[in-house]
Image: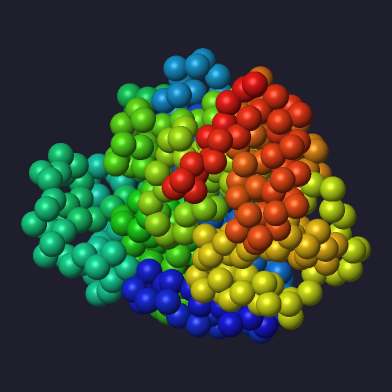
Length: 463
């Protein structure tokens, strides 16, 4: 097994990963609320846990990975009514779109993809348990709420105290609650909305609150306590805080051993979100950029760090990824298995074991590419392709990729030219002047003239 360390939000520290059951990992990630196309922020979240899933499996673990689908929600109901379609039609369509987008980005399907509407009986049973422990009550308006002040550890994950929360609370217009801090577990149906989606319960007809959905699904699928629970940083409070209160309140022991949260995607120093209107759907970005370029762009930042979205950063990612592919051009691997004892592979594993540090892992790939430019050795090509495959990169041939990105960028082929210039710079740095001269000659034959500057940069123009 590996020497994996994971940053645990609950502990505010990196901790050595020790699974509850030797050789096996159970991981739950809060997935999408399905009513629209997924944006790049969603892609970043799913990519972060895709990389964790891949590395855990590469480390020899048998992984059960559940990522839920929220298919009942106020926004879903509103959108379905606006479209004049059923909730099932809406959520089925956008689930299909999500699967198409994630598939394009190389995000592996989770082991389990539970839908909230399939687990209503488990939600009702959990609420009954909470009620029996004086942690839930039915308000005067019919809703069933969680009694936050009756759970002594509330705020531990987010670092918020009840006093802080109380000081920052708004005037609550819901008079059915005993305390403004309490949150809804079961929403009573309203007579004024006869077409509202609802289920029968001992408290009357209604539907579940958002937080109880995940507590019910993860405990049903992974047990009352499991290894890893993840999601975006925006879910830390209140969603994950409320999950802890529900699950630990009901079961009387710890819910999760490692809480993991990925950072935001930012645009002009603001979080990308639908509410701000500054989001870019995966579909729209795929129209302009190759899917592997988008994947590479996301992996260049550590999953906990902010990811700054811009066309300039994606263009830079495209050039950088092209450098890796051009290094492999014309060099076949030796057909042997990836050698984890080889120094580059050992460094790659060390980076991934350090809280899934993909930026350092990618730096190892570029070191291998530099060595390959110099040696053209099949063993080096094998290591480069093999390590890249672990994080879902370099699956195509160089020619397949180069043809895709040149057409993807523009008809001028600027990306391929920039990649060739970068490859030449690597060759010069390695004092492989024969390779450097060959690249210059090849570019000249294609009508591209290079001009080396005193500061070490190279400009180019068309003949």
